Length: 239
Image (cartoon, rainbow, N blue to C red; front, top):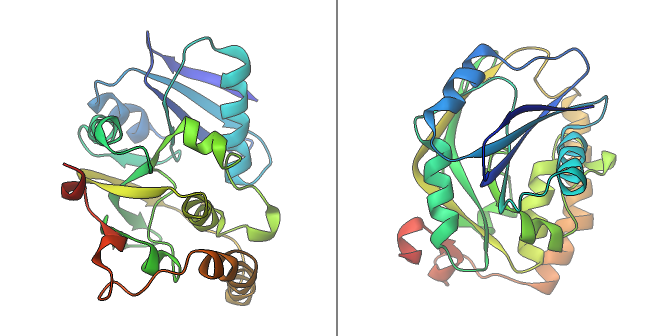
């Protein structure tokens, strides 16, 4: 089920919040999204699916029902506190970057059941091949997302679907870029934490290693950062 939460005139960002049946947007998210001046179309995509499937459903609905040509999509969790001008700053980055930069990401931290910070470190494919450090709440160019086939929704990769998405972008020749001074806080509760055992996580990580990472390394071997500094991309590099 798709619900329109907000529709500004001439939107520049399609915001899609995935919801399980019965879940609601938090008050903090509704308030802090107003800390931005960028016009948006905000869709709530509800369904008993994994998160990227609900997001893709929202994107598909937009393509079928909205005439506005929106360049960017921002998957937005239901319970986060957006930093001031977070969306504005991320839009500014994607507006000026080279064509091969497909997405930009922010600093974020979890508070609640999980307390942990994740700085938006420079993009480094060598690190990304080992572990994901990029949030799903990242701003993505819709035209590049269409080229790679949309969001990764395969159930076999559940819990690590975001990681596969960023790796798939690289496989198609696209990279990401951190946005300076963009940040948000994710409020973690027991019902929002990824379900599953540690053994299940290890099994799926191993599956990604064999089905996604090894083919990428065979096709696009990247030397370590100390050998080739151009594998590390910062915002200043594109100015």
